[in-house]
Length: 160
Image (cartoon, rainbow, N blue to C red):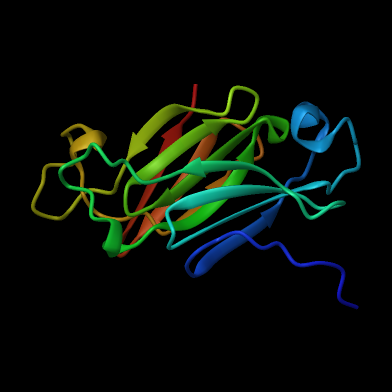
């Protein structure tokens, strides 16, 4: 049965996920501690949107596109995957601009992990200089490690 629709993106939506635990983000749920009261989505409009599943309201929007980067091209992609971290108080998003970690309590980007490494660049170089897209994320059950994938590479990141 149809329950609701979340409207707000201005281009293709590529990913949508429920938060597993919402109690850490009461500022976005109005104090509601229902397990699946938050969801997130991302797509080709370069935004990550947080939704209150009970009301359907867009409670936060994060800009994924780094307008200051000379290598960024708004028309070349967007958000490809995301996952909630740390009891849903943080969110990781990936795509054409690598992996970015958003703190939902402060509504800010708190960490940039970078992209994937092209085959012609030494993998010992800084991940922030890598240029390949990141298409998928998977959070380890310990909450501190993320796997990311693109083309022929899988990279493991430590968030500590």
